[in-house]
Image (cartoon, rainbow, N blue to C red):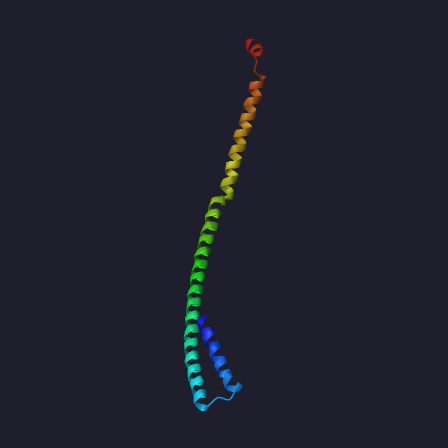
Length: 119
């Protein structure tokens, strides 16, 4: 911000050289001061670029860390959701057989009665 202000001040000072009648000593003073301001402006702009570069690096690093975390969470979700299809089919078949056995036993129990037992 300061660098840009100094650059604008230097431009305004140089602009006054074309606007009026200024002595050669005055022109030299203005040019000298404008050169100094331009040098300071460049230093300020370089500082701003450096700070922007650091901020960009931090944002990039944070983005990389977030991507790593997202990848880790997605892998964890896949591990939690991932089931071997053949293992799942075997378990379903076993459970189906247990249910059918339970139905058969229930049907037999329904046919039992004290009257049938006594006769």
